[in-house]
Every structure is written in structure tokens, then in C-alpha cells.
Length: 181
Image 1: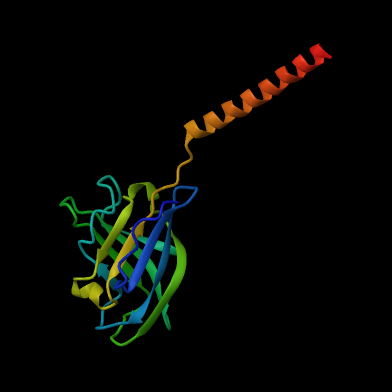
Image 2 (image 1 turned 45 degrees about the horizontal axis):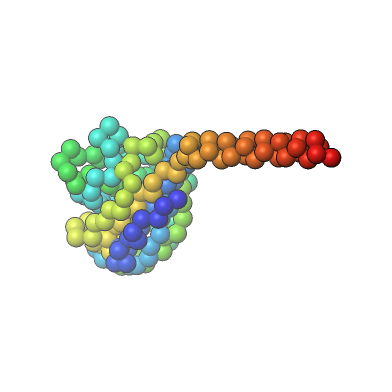
């Protein structure tokens, strides 16, 4: 897996998205801090950047297979993708289990599959939003979409050809040695 530039240290919530063998999306959530202002049931990262293809999901909620602990009594339960055709205006929303008030200490460290989100619809890169008030309350949100790891068919073919040539050369060497003996 290729590692992209690290998310800004100021981001309170970091979300890393990786592909699974079945084409699904694994979300890993990390971060800590204290909420600075109340927010509803969502952390809204508006205009975070173009992280989803135009042919991908638009204005859709996806459930996490396993909710991720955010703070005492609060979990992250949903993931929302909103593609915007205007460059750099895709939105991301993180759905919480309950209303979050100001002054809550959070310490997020967990991962879950995002049910129904096809990883192939996401664009690899690092995206960050810390300037808008609705993400500033958690110190900002950064999203890292890792590139899909793909085995190179050409490399596998060359390796197979090399092994075949090695076996063939050993057979010839044995025949020559037997003929000389």
C-alpha cells in the first residue's frame, strides 16, 4: 500500500479509507480532543475536496458494519457521501449515535467496513477541512483515501517466464553432463 502525505497534525478526526479484497471500503478512524461547540448527530465536512468519482455515490448514507467508539456513550455509525460537480466541493458527513454537546473529550481509535460503499468510486488522495465551523468543533477532519493495491499481471508473467527458463536451463545442463560422462 502506498502511503500518501500525512494528514495535518491539527486535524482532530482522521479517517483513512482502504479497499478490501471484495471491493468494499474499510474506514479507520483516529483522533482525540475536546469538542468545542455543540453539533447535532453529524460531523459535516463540507467542500472537503473531490474524493468521489462523478459516477460514484451522491447524497447517500452508508452504515458502518460495526459502530466505532467516539466518546463515552457516543459512537460513529454512518458515513455520508455527497458528490458535487463543482471542483473541490464534495461533502462528507459522519453520522453519530446521539447529539454531541460542547466540552466532550473524545478519543477515537477503531475501524469498520462501510456497508455498500464501493471503494472503486473513491479518488486516492489526502483531503482536509478545518476551516468550517461544523468541523472546527472537533479540530478539523482529514480523509486519506489509499490507492487500491493491484497485483501487476506483467510482473507475475515475467516471474513465471523466468522460472520456466531456469528449469529448462537446468534440464539442458543435466543432459550435457550425462552425455559427457
